[in-house]
Length: 144
Ligand code: AMP
Image (cartoon, rainbow, N blue to C red):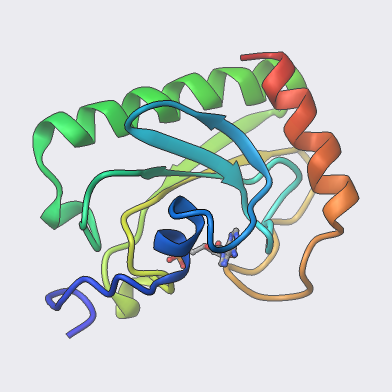
């Protein structure tokens, strides 16, 4: 059911879009929003979401909105590269709980990789220090 189901208006990213939940924002335009992942798998882990789509996953979004989403993913990835100088950048996206999805509003992960640093667990572990996330977000914003 988690791959094929009803969009829940009360999912956490929908609340962030409506301003009912805080986020450490990196970038926003008319169609997309980028913010820091609060359970980062590496330093600079950023999420990008569409703002106007009730899409739970990749299968439910229209091509125009998807194009805008991936455009923002590229923009943020470039800024992450400039700001944090990682050795690699992983872009991922999960569809359905068995695939690893935990929040059912379409999103893409931008995960910088640093040589010699092990990747943290997905959507697990301790919540990040908000001051550190704010510093990282400011660095990425400056590079946009
Ligand atoms: P997924 O498991 O692909 O659905 O990814 C959901 C991501 O959202 C995980 O990496 C979580 O760490 C992250 N996450 C969950 N709640 C929040 C939140 N309130 N703010 C930012 N990131 C979140």
